[in-house]
Amino acid sequence: MGGILRRIGFILLLCCAGLFADIGDFYFDGQKHHPGMIVGQKPVFKAEGDFSQVQSLDDFVLHVDGQIVTAHNKKYNNSSFSCAFALPLELGEREIELWAYYSSGSFQKTVTVNVRQEKGMLSDMVLFPSPATTNLNVCYELGAAQSVSFLIYNLSGQLVCRRDFVSGRPGGNPGYNQVSIDLDTYSKRPLSNGAYVAILLRPGSSTVLAKEKFLILR
Image 1 (cartoon, rainbow, N blue to C red):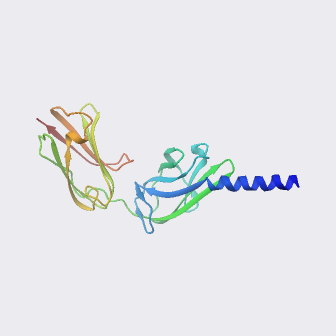
Image 2: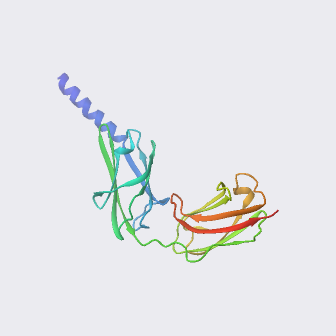
Image 3: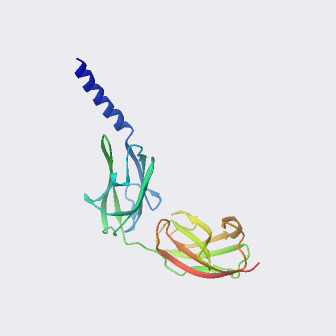
């Protein structure tokens, strides 16, 4: 009788462990997955869930169409896992699957995305006025709705100002975008007179969409 009770207790323990191991939502380039979602060939991937029982990054395994793929820039904590695909995804409908292993077993989730050729800038980035004082207008065209980050560096290579724009909203809309940057609000400290470099890129990616110099004179 005692052996049966111990066996039942062990089974219940495994079941309870499973309750605390779960994968929630998937995100691609910061956008929550939805049916029919379109992504580029090298999206930044993120999964939310309860990963408190996962021991290391090696316990996360990413599959595309049933095949294990290499990922880099992997990070995780108790509630999220993120990485970047090392190689471009093939165009068309792809099945993305994440496995997470823990001491008592594993759990997984699978979604389908439509991979298309990435469309970046349709035109050069235009900045005005130059010299700028406290506000800088930024104009550009995007080939598709996407999240972008606007960064300003001084000539020493230090990041001094940043503003992020979300896909499908002003600054991240397909086609023409014009946004105004309050330099005092988004800079780490008051910017002195001189030359600066503005860069537009995708969050989580080193791909530069546009780069332009401008002046500040107050």
